[in-house]
Length: 282
Image (cartoon, one colour):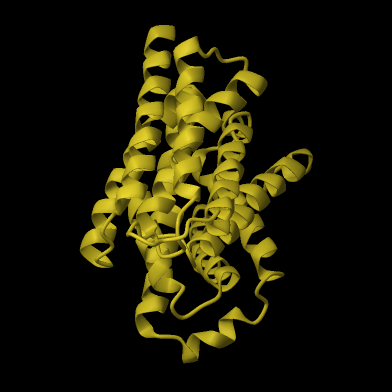
């Protein structure tokens, strides 16, 4: 639910800030909150040998993911973005096979193929996601940005597995968010100065993104990854687009179009097959 709410919240925040600015301010707020927690709890610093992997996780899972997703949502609706993002179920399954020696049955590979087809259908659409007579369809570059963000967060999910065996969930999330915030600063060094001129709704949306989808949801996700295989944990992400589409309808009055619903339905079928593959495997 929290990650589902992030997609419409990002759309609101982009009304007053740049994509990089939204990402940096979101994780600047999260970093400050976690810094207070780290000082109170006397959290130890990570070991020097783990800094390269932690830094890379922060770069790819926080900085790159948020910059690409925010950029994509300039032209892609919250609901469609969430459906594209849900294909990380398949990406995580592939990465888990390659790097974690987890298994995936034939039905799972069929599901991954359906996810690709569904994203492809959503890619060929008007920038405003309309589906009316006379529309000229073209490849949406925003969809490409969202898909790159999906691949980056999938890699982040797999790479953190060994670190979660050494650090607590809150420790790893703190280190990763600090690293990601530092990377995002170089993309938007003057973002803090724009707060005074930005709409209040956009600023409040960033604060919400920092505290709830940013800290709380990331902690919950890493806790799940510390207890379950990556591919099995990834299957639960199938619920994100359902939550995102509903919240975007209530909050932003975004109504899914015929084309986005078709692509989303195919993606959801693919995710179901991937989940079924894990059940058969287990």
